[in-house]
Image 1 (spheres, rainbow, N blue to C red):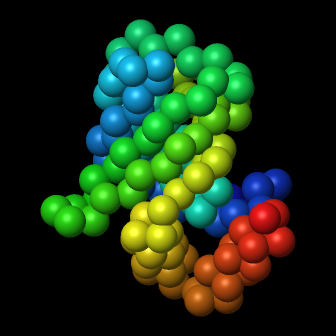
Image 2: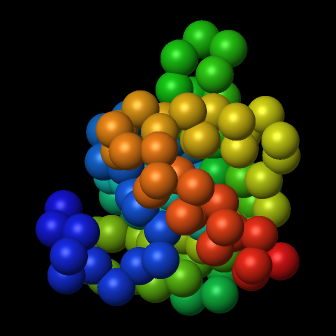
Length: 122
């Protein structure tokens, strides 16, 4: 991803992994395309007809014992891609995301910038 032309405030880590999205009690399998401290980009495996503003619950298993869960809202739907905005995330999930961003960004200042943006938003 070209970070210089990206308008996002949060660095996103490309990450191809299975994800589970729960919407109104129904589970939908998806592929995680990228993830950040503020949300995720997914490609659903089924016929989930996501709608902007729709609340959902995202579960990503990065490795055994390393699970990221977040309550989110559908921020945008573009073709087969669904962008989620994180509404609530627990401390363990933030820790796993922090490690993922720090490892993939290879620049601690990016992580510090993202955490500062996250704190300012709340």
